[in-house]
Image (cartoon, rainbow, N blue to C red):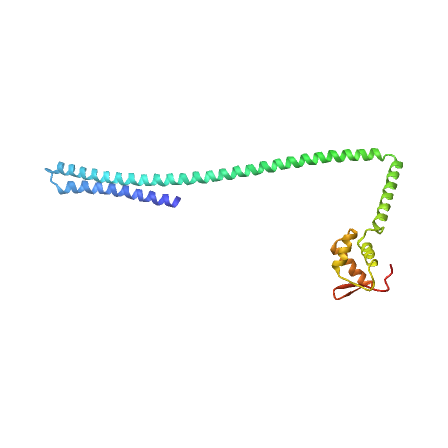
Length: 227
């Protein structure tokens, strides 16, 4: 931009110098070309010519200034557009900062509430277990619950898939082959609580244990199976 302005100033100076030089030449030619008798007429003609030249130069300068103003207006519009975009970016950033601030305030409020709740619970526990006898009593009750839960967890259920399948196989005849759909029909009739997949899995276990045999897609109860 500075180089452009520098070139423009040099061009303008050259125009001014050319105008002054032209006016001087016209005056000299007017004085030399005409005698004293016609000197006034020559000077008048020279003045007219100079006026025409100056008018043309003024028009050219005016047009140049108008073009420069148009460029300036265009630059101002671009600058205003950039400022508008920057202002929108700043507003967006401000909105994000406000959202982060609200989130931080909400988090801090939650932490404060939790800290108050924790402090209350700690005070309650401290007050409750200030006596060692109360603490030992609650600890013994907890041990009993854990032991009972272990016993219940490992106690075999009479309604497990294995027990149900075992009862079903014990009710089969030893001299007959049974298809799976026949066994499943018996399960439905008796009302055992077992799924098809569970029944298949348990039948496969009994085959591996040697209590059943699978022949041509049918199940056969082995003779050594005890009821």
